[in-house]
Image 1 (tube, one colour):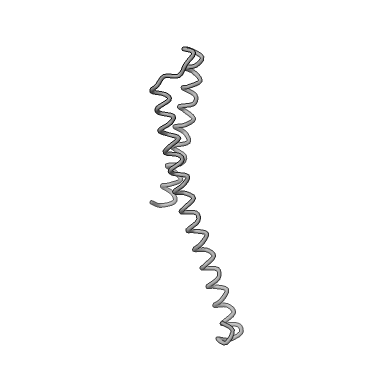
Image 2 (cartoon, helix red, strand yellow):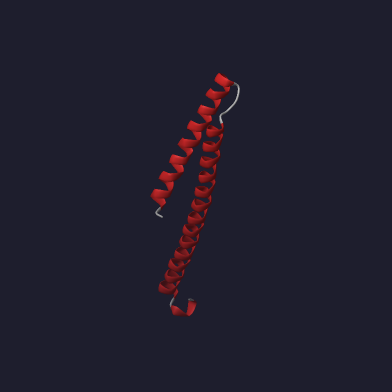
Length: 88
């Protein structure tokens, strides 16, 4: 999954959660309670959001690790170029 697609899914899940929360508030005002359908939808969307956040965190960690390795490699290559191979 690409980062762009993951971000879009996170945004969609966030929107769905907000919509379900608004619907819950409306149902409470109108009926004094929340329907089982709305509760179920909210739980489903919150679960999706949690899974997407975990996936996003894993992707972010991989990118951070990749950047560190790349930076270290570039830095090491620079030392080699400046000081010669004896300093690598």
